[in-house]
Image (cartoon, rainbow, N blue to C red; front, side, top):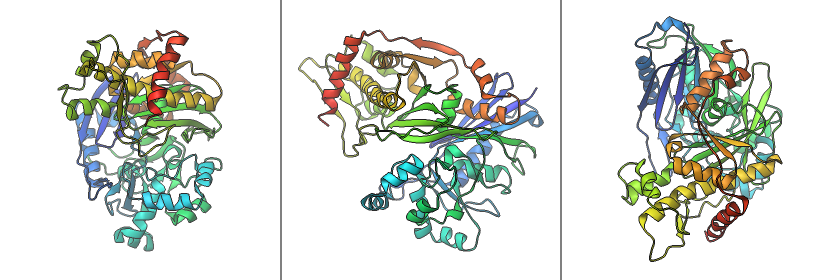
Length: 490
């Protein structure tokens, strides 16, 4: 028996998943870590804390197996978080700057005023925003003496979390990345598949700091001196978290899409072997690169608030004690009674892109109850996803046939049914919801030949439930019109 180990390194914690080659789950462990907020708008991670959670999680899932039977390791990670470490020792030089961090907003505005956003979008598929890694590298090289000194002495390694973990797992012998993470830096050319000289120059980031890019699926390195693991286990699949979820959902063909309902909602649409430039300021990104060099691309749209809206109902309003209770509260009424909630609690993302927008309820009357408002909160999550998917369909030039869903909120049947209703397509919820880890595991298995191709993954993907649209076209149009009127008021 051979085992596959997936490391899912996320924003608030690390998960290790161990499965056998028939995809029976052997063990799973998640460990949280502390986040740091040194100044308003700044978010940092201690890389030593992250590495410790990786070691602890691996130790927990491998207690009852022969560790020499682990055939491969897959990695998936929070994408735009940027790390700085010593090439020779693998030790961190500073804290990581997290994807949520906004400290480079002024640099992004400066580049926009120079009319450079179109150039960056054309070459990278991204927008000029502090979210992405490139401006973080520019800031650190200018402001952190340890990073600046390491660059001058030739010891600096800069990369996303995947690269840091490859370095640590390989005993600091390999410093690598792959296209799904590289394509989130503002410096990787989507079309030529190289680090771009012109963009690096505009950002004032030396191109040589960026790491060698290898295919997402294939052997990157082998374990060396990792506590609790033998040397020589291949690290053979690496993907950013949302791309790993796309793979874990078996969205392998052009036109297939997935939505991950987490704190926010992340929607990715497989667009095949050619990048599509969005007319709606959606992101164009690399989904993965196969061992044979073939690239698959995706369109991506993010809603900043999804599960976070339910957390707000729980913690801010105090209407429920546990997040799962919102479904029962919402189901105590037959409709939201005309109320619409715009979940712009941290601005609006794609396709509206209004950072100054604030949350709003419309349609309140004397008869409104917290049950109506709770139902409207769930509907608001679905409405904003419908906007994103509508933009994606227009960019692709044809309608979606179905949407695969994952994340904690997909357990909410009321939300899933309303999402299917306003989209007019079937929602498919898989039996196994740890889709991100599963995507990393799939990539690792193909990388070492346990599966010969990605197409074999489709046989393993199993549906828990299909939510079919229950509204006719007129009902759907009328329902979406309520949202359109509300969003126009923001």
